[in-house]
Length: 132
Image 1 (cartoon, helix red, strand yellow):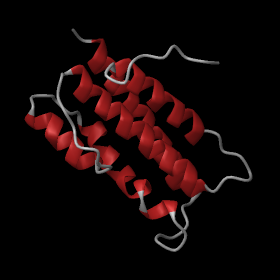
Image 2 (cartoon, rainbow, N blue to C red):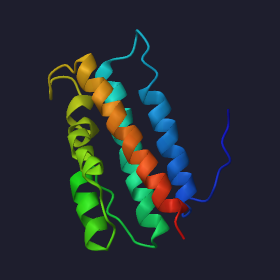
Image 3 (cartoon, rainbow, N blue to C red):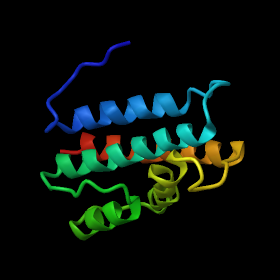
Image 4 (tube, one colour):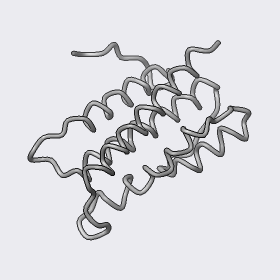
């Protein structure tokens, strides 16, 4: 199902892309490596966090380090709940697990946790953007 597209300066477009990444992360197909699904979970969380920056009219660096991004948001006055800080666990999936040999295999338990964290971060970002 196609979602309505918004300009890249609209946080709703970043949330759309985060939802798309999350849907891919949940597509646990037999032929897909779990590491690739975890990459999609990381991307979902990253884009959700960046949507909050855009909503606040703030710029962000094009980095994958979720802890760094959250610290920047916190310094700008955004309250970051404890559960959102768990997003830092997803940061290694941005690079290390994408290439053979840089990281070890990921188990199903770690994959399911990555998806749960990404879902939580996305829900938090959606609530932030719903605020005036």
